[in-house]
Length: 139
Image (cartoon, rainbow, N blue to C red; front, side, top):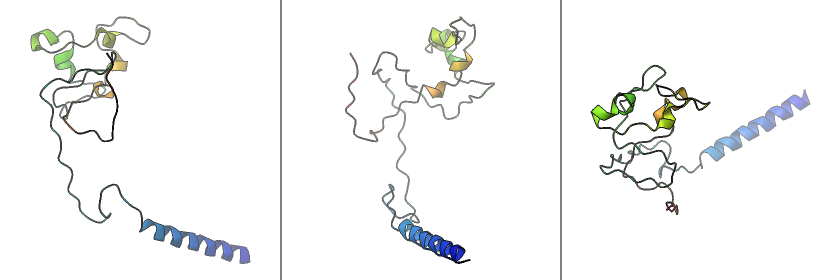
């Protein structure tokens, strides 16, 4: 019985201490947790194409893709960039590596391992760096 009471008291003391610690937590938002802070301005797409910084870097996407449907059955990117349509749309064709399966066999359609474009490619925007960066592009 005494052991249970002591355990309950220690537990209560820890909870009170945790609650007091919560009130002094600093945020990364430059304000208190209950204060409404307006969102930073969103950055638009950059009109010019960015150059690649290293040899195998996936190209950045120079247009908006937020309304593109890409799921298990549909990939809107392929309506312009698949080898069958890129010429008539004046769009860059996918690299031939996108048509190889995991064993290196050539396919007529995009390989399942390359289906979700945004796992490698991201839209390019003219936004400041989030952290200091000393990266230098390769030659």
